[in-house]
Image 1: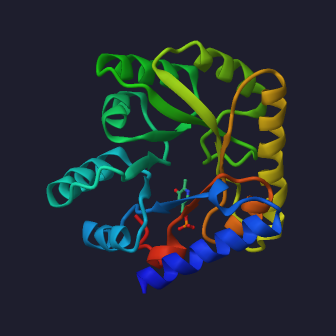
Image 2: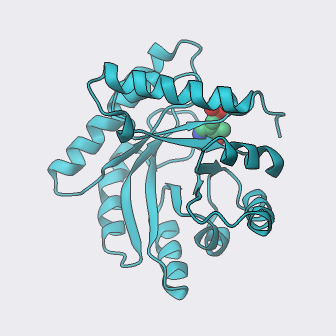
Length: 231
Ligand SMILES: *Cc1c(COP(=O)(O)O)cnc(C)c1O
């Protein structure tokens, strides 16, 4: 099941990329394992998946250390895709290869400080909020350039791009405008001299649209692992 789901998703990623005149290896699959147990994650590793996304530091901490006891596959990458509180920055820096949800100067500075302490260059994305939904985290469009410029001064942070989590619509075509907007914002920032190669956007039900609009990372849970129990 899992192996079929994964290969089906990889095929759809390739097709979407080619439809958009892009190379399939420009798009990385982030398998979202929140609420998924480590036995299933091991199956996913056996199926060839290597990059995993978690949305809570504590949950990830337990899974990552449990998995390390059982397998020593060093080319597995862990991404944090959920909101990060400053007081957990220290643990996030220890655990994650890429933190996708930086949305304030304060958080970036704390990550920089913690990364410096352990001699790490922490890769990050900045999460952008493109709609007025109150529950969504992320920096506003107006706040973005000052934040990016502040982050660029931090020596132990490597800014690699932008991430967004648009509102949910049943019809993925209605999400297209948000994906397009993130790409435009990125292109504007690059015109001003910043380098932001990565665009993390698109989930199970809308990743193909996201790829057509320029996504380089798609974050997919349900379509690989099945419906989650809500928590
Ligand atoms: C859960 C989650 C996903 C994956 O959602 P699916 O619809 O299960 O693919 C992607 N991004 C973030 C930030 C998430 O929290």
